Amino acid sequence: MFTLWSLVEATLLFLNAVCVLSEERFLSKYGWGISSQVQGFGEPATTKGQILMLVRSIRTVAKVPLILFNIIAIVFKLLLG
Image (cartoon, rainbow, N blue to C red; front, side, top):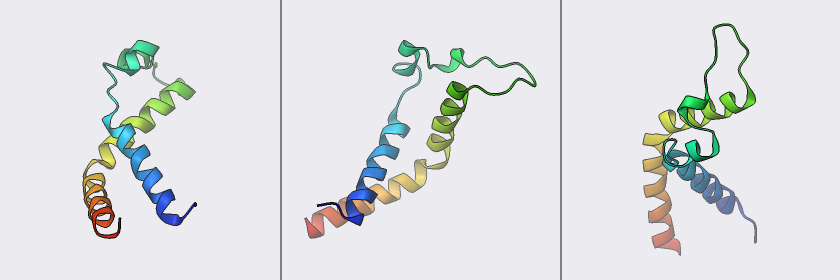
């Protein structure tokens, strides 16, 4: 059954996965590492570069709120099953 809680939980799991993802160990194997994004001044950003910047931004901004949301989700699961 698809509920609002399922959507929140899936979003939380996705954000956790993005924050834990290691650029040096995992992404560089597939050409998505830090060194692959070389862009000159004034050049438009590529799609790959935009995705990498989104991953880095999520990791920077969502780290502390994710800790709180994970604690809330764990307590919620413990109390209500």
